Length: 281
Ligand SMILES: NC(=O)c1ccc[n+]([C@@H]2O[C@H](COP(=O)([O-])OP(=O)(O)OC[C@H]3O[C@@H](n4cnc5c(N)ncnc54)[C@H](O)[C@@H]3O)[C@@H](O)[C@H]2O)c1
Image: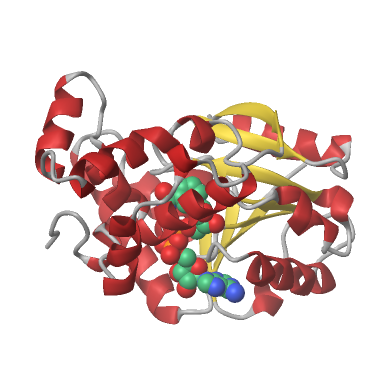
């Protein structure tokens, strides 16, 4: 049974998964190579919990207890857990190197879950010392609120690995959905045209970002495509677009947009950098 979860990467997703896990009584180790990101994550969580206290959704004591269940660490030797969830940069070789380092310091039953949005989990698993203990655990942004978790199986994953991830997701009050490893899994495959068709309209000068967002929000979408890309991170969304496009044999309809590439090159990554399609203070 999972008691301690090590979450790697304290960025947009890692910090939110860490908070969600601590809110459901897991002991959490949040690991990042950047102490600045760890500090930023702690400040963001304290502020989120403070808001919940102000809204009477949480007592101040419960808020403090949640934070005290999280250890913020930048030394890999401190990452001893029953389940590792990685939410680091979307680069397969970096994820593989991290999992193999963690396999060396952890006990032989530890389960490795990747939160990748679009990389092949099978290709990652193949290069890990214990491929049977690797699977996808794909949370949605923000992980404290969104219920869905895609549990991505590979031909190598054993039953115990999948069961551990499914049970942990349920204990975090999430809705785990099993799927086979495939480009973009379920959601990021289905959702690709939402972003890409909106980007095409902007590229062709048909209308601007804000008008597209306002219109789609008026039809019932919670967030327009540009506001959503800024929340996700334009680097992540562009990486997912490229991965899915390549993995499906480069169909023209899924070609990534030059606007996405330009945003990444300019460092306009969205909320996390203060500027994307919109500005954030
Ligand atoms: N942003 C989203 O909406 C979203 C949603 C679901 C899944 N994901 C996936 O989650 C992962 C993380 O995305 P994000 O948006 O949180 O990224 P992010 O850029 O906000 O954060 C990444 C963090 O990883 C850290 N990092 C990089 N290399 C590291 C290493 N070797 N060891 C430890 N820490 C390292 C960075 O310092 C940074 O804090 C990606 O695989 C992405 O595809 C993202």
